Image 1 (tube, rainbow, N blue to C red):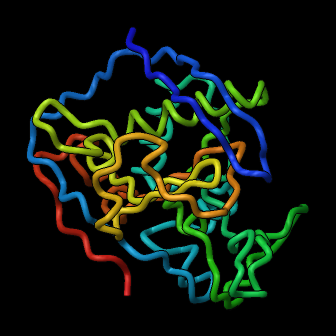
Image 2: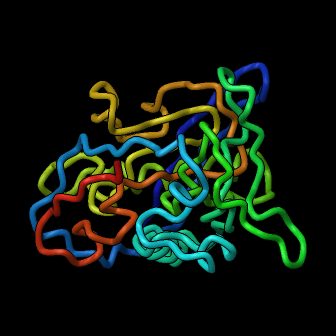
Length: 247
């Protein structure tokens, strides 16, 4: 076993408190990263505008996939793999066909999920939104950090983030994130994404920028298209693939 250590935190007025250091035990990493690694700045924009048919059914997702909120295969594999390592991680939002929960610039974002709950609910295929979440395409997964003390939840989320952002033996930063195609991390009012050059050197939770987006009870991960399809080297590919996002 190895241990990731959560640092000492002071959080803002909205979640006032100071959390002492805590440790979270993590099994040894079974992935052997010996193939060429993906570039550190790969990022595929969220397809936030379009109909349910165009967005929620992208990349081969079927009606049944959407109804069952199934993830794309890479996102599913990464999520299942990470839960074998972080055994405390609960399942949050998966591949739900839904809008963003909140946007400070778009009043239409209310987190509505399709199909609406209830027996026999139909998918309004031509419903149009301009604020779809990455969850709508199965390109994002949430990991609940537990219902224990704030100190332990912080330790859990930090352990996952720093596992993803840790350098490998060759000094490649964010090695696991790059291998799995993770392009965005959100947790406890801090954010990281690969579209911002200033963030590519982050290796700890405290390196993430403050972004005022909540996510206090779960770690949110978004994936590149290649990662979401299971085509990056963390899934066994021999070299980084070239995958173009849907236009």
